[in-house]
Image (cartoon, rainbow, N blue to C red; front, side, top):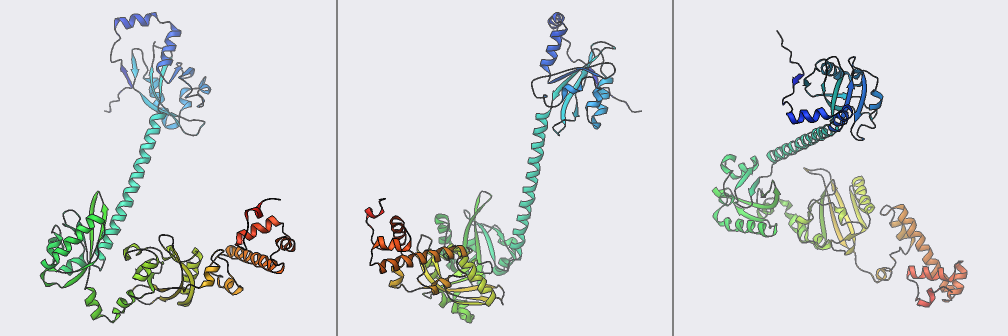
Length: 483
């Protein structure tokens, strides 16, 4: 047999004699005011369930249409799922007891259901039911915010898990030997399979060891210097060390990074030292290219720098190759973004570019006119672009025209096609024509500026303004005064 528990329950604490005495002094009006003041919403429902009176505290319910409830059955003012609760609240209201609080929802003209927590009491058998209500909108808003926050945390957690999975997968399948070392203790915290094979040890035997112990004692001091430099400046030069156990020489590259409130060092172990590579591989000509007096850069297909020689670093005013590696080449190459785009578009279409005139911007504001020759290497393990960048010789005529920066001939103008935008090209063409016309008028009138202005259809002030703009002739301050 199923036992049903009634919603009604006796009042837990009987009022004291003093409270009963005070309650006896209250008339019906005072009692109504007391109920309205202690609840957010109070209703009087007759024996048929019809709302006969309603009072709400403040203006919180002003736009919810509570006034329209009068004369309607209470059960018709709630949503479908709340109807059984209204029936139970009316059925279990009895003298000397108060029902448990139950949450119901009212349809709202604003579109969002109005949540109210109700309890009922019947002062006299067969009499009306007094309904006490508490507004739950603030609680509902907090619950909604909590749910949204939990969803956001779940999404962030999923993204972090996906990023961690990608990192671990790349770390494990990488063919380059890599060790992750704690910067403070020098203990190995992670090792990939390639590094374990290079060291000739199982990965679990490498974890937790001092990284210095993995190398020959002759290389230990150099490795300690690397870690000291990383802690002091965050950078350290590559070095060649000998692995322990007669595993041969290796080139060690160290990079510092922070994660999870700890500082770690990423150690990359190249298979052989640079000297060994030069002897075993005819491509040791790269060592010669690195010392060329002309800039040399290799980029990937997305135009990010893979390697650069010292001459290029001098042109862009940087000290180490690490500062440019991974950066887009157009950060320094080109007077405008369209120049670099035109260069690489031509390179992809034709495979090579020669005598491409442009400019190289230094990190600290310098600008150098350069000539670029480039080639696309599509066949290979990694498609890439190779570029040589040669500084253009400085000509006296170039210095003379530096004040305006305008092309001096039609040939120079046509050379800009594809390297600057059409809007810029038209503007510079207009400026060039204006400058040439003013110079010709001054030459014809033998520097008679009033006659030159009349010849050009300009006012004298307009002529002086354009002469000043293009740097033509010498102007006195009185020339710019309005007559």
